[in-house]
Length: 250
Image (cartoon, rainbow, N blue to C red; front, side):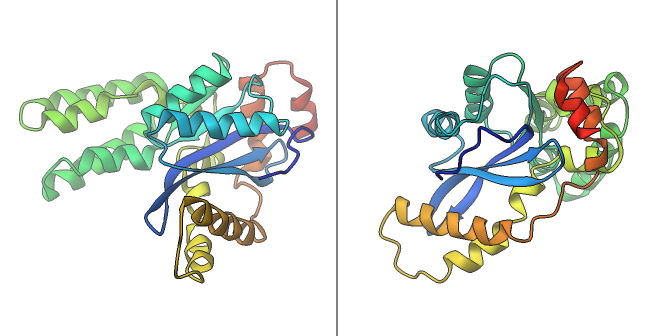
């Protein structure tokens, strides 16, 4: 929580609020530098649906040298507060990719089991297409669902543009699979659960935060470079044309 972040060129940030320790919600951020190395950036107690918590986390990163105005890709869950906080504090150059796994889950949980399996497959296929065709396919799916499952149809369309941000940036292959979901930040959860389980009497949210931080530091020891990191130059070029960072990553 006190690391100097000013000397690292972060090109992507994963942010997620799905961590719960002793019934306390924790929002976490993990950054990826231009060479594909992952870094735990910071944590904040509270839900990602709480706008103040989001701003507190981003503000704390800025105080430690993380320039919020540099164009980056932000990979997030479906939190409206998280999306709004990024927009307000990072400006128009921040590019947001909504987690496709969260989106599919949000849609299919509103459907009966037999229809859910079909819709899950259709959405996965749509995400493999180019931006125009993929969005068109999902709009067709929403129209098909609207009569009998209006909630699911609305969920398909909500945030549609940001489901294809990486596609529009020309990201493909293994790198696209890694940048399309928040799995990178969710994968340390097993270490967090193991480490935080050592404490049995949590007094408050700050204590939960400290044990969560210890879990992330433990997980960080085994972090590997982002899969597909050799293609990060494509992401950097899309975010920052003619940037010097492109030369470093090449």
